Length: 387
Ligand SMILES: Cc1ncc(COP(=O)(O)O)c(C=O)c1O
Image (cartoon, rainbow, N blue to C red; front, side):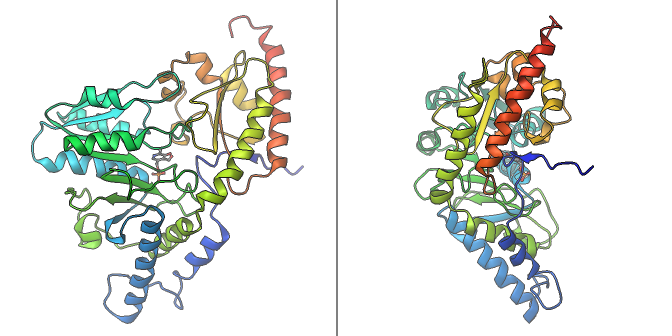
């Protein structure tokens, strides 16, 4: 019997590539397309370079900056590494201080840990029970040797939006650099970098219907950074390696198509419908701030069910029990624990994330399945008093 495809509600983990993006990428792969090395001076090389330059312009336009402020990387993980290590290590001494938040993505937290072990000073700010931090906490943590503050925009697990404009203003007024991981933002929430005081921004393509393995770091004019990858003069010497034309062109097309104004209300409506349905399950509660949040992510705690059983029972819905990068870890989500959830409640939580191709039918089927499975698991749990 043919296995039914699960209902895909994991767009925060990754998105399918939009067919218009695939088409744009296909034009860069074969002999009759822009396949040549964009660093080559001959005509085919120039053609590829032109495609890269148009993609760079589209990405820059989406976040209201200039094309020359974009450095291509392999994704937001590399951008976060480049931002944190490139700024702190670039100082040439071990006296720098970094401020970040306990609910950041591992790409920031694990990088901060490496810096910590290398002798730099790192402060990890707590969030409140809704997942938010206050600008006052950043102000209190600033020290004479603070070089960089790193706070994400949209949290990938709970969808809450940190108060970036206020933190940016504080950092700018104190002469401290401000880095933002905006991997989850594009197409969901506005990111007007021309209005906000942000110095470095990590971006990725695969959360926005573009290909995996390509991203960028935005650098505000004048920000000095030390490269992590050496071996060529690409990207103004900041990131060596032959530019991946097809990936970059797909990334550019994906950002060009990302239309927050029109798409966000649709995502919001789907998420609201899902929440309406799920909250009728007894005891279900929302994880994260109820209003200050991205329109596509819904993280819910389901008391009275055991985490692993919940995951197995909901196999017909492709959802996540934490960040996609942490699926090998049997531990409860560190993000949910930072909000004050117990281990068992954090393990009995699921992240649903809707996207461009989600339908009302998907949502209604997912609600019906969740209601049925949670009821079944709770009956089972009533026979196992230790759950
Ligand atoms: C907030 C955040 N930062 C960084 C990353 C890593 O991005 P990439 O997969 O492009 O390396 C992700 C993706 O899971 C993310 O959600």
